[in-house]
Length: 439
Image (cartoon, helix red, strand yellow):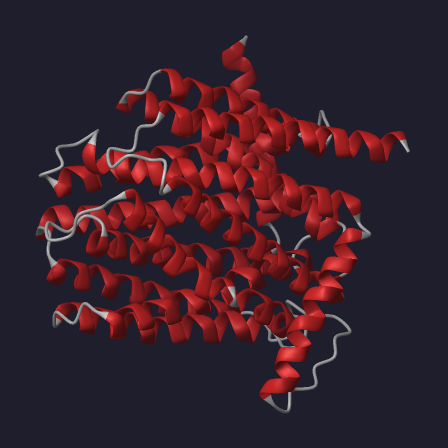
């Protein structure tokens, strides 16, 4: 019976995938996403190799937290600017130009790494590339409702965001494979970076095939800003407008709150996994083994993301999106409690797969709720507000993990707190939605 149920779920997924993929415009946007996120995974794996798994550089909880803060906070500040731009200028042009610029920037990073210039200028250039990525990802979220009908948003999000995440993990896996073939070192990292730059160019070429006006925005004020002061005021006004718009659309606002709580808990687990793979699941003196262990863990989690894309659309035909979000929170709480009691590498891989389902299953539903309950003229700013919240909670998690996680990554107390965060998030979300429906 269980086997037949699995076949039925998979069959429904394939049927829905065919429905979404029959749209030419969706296929173009989908291909642009997949190629770019493959490049993201390759780029980020090269950075992880350079900064965390180099024989010359040791990793601690504080160092990893600082690296996440330095990498995420600056480009998170770009997010609100992205929203205002996405609601004023052609989103297709933004996707095209963002990838072209990123290709050039990554080539510059590769040149700096190959010549041994590992210092402040390298960090600045890396941050520039990561900042540009905010425009691209927010643009994808704001563009999706233009290429599918509203009734297909859940399925489209399941296919798009999950496949994009899986492609990023595949890109990271390719980077690990190149590192295994060529050996560790800055020269190998430079080669991996050039591979990422090539895929950014491919994504730009795919974006150029879409008509400039296809992805919106609709009925937006496209007047350019005259000066930096006007731009800053537009950003602040845009954020305030997005917050007010979302506040009056409680399904979207409550969904953002629950994904923030889940993201915080997942961030703590992510920092712990870096340390566990570096010092517990592998010999600390063998950074290549640690990198392979981490890549395997991320690939397993990515398989969970893909499973969420199969499961979520089928499950949400039989229950409300809010009910599936609650189930994901409670399941993640139970898994994290298991980490607190007992943890081995095989267990971490299995739990990572299940946490991937819970995290991505929630995100698919939240994406659909935010997209479906915001007007198009606000959607770019709403998605950027979403992006801002998503990243800030992850940085907060890294900061909270730094003083409590040991260098080997295993702290039963920390995992117990993570379980409580998942549980409290799910119950608070259930209470909020119950009050709305009861009222």
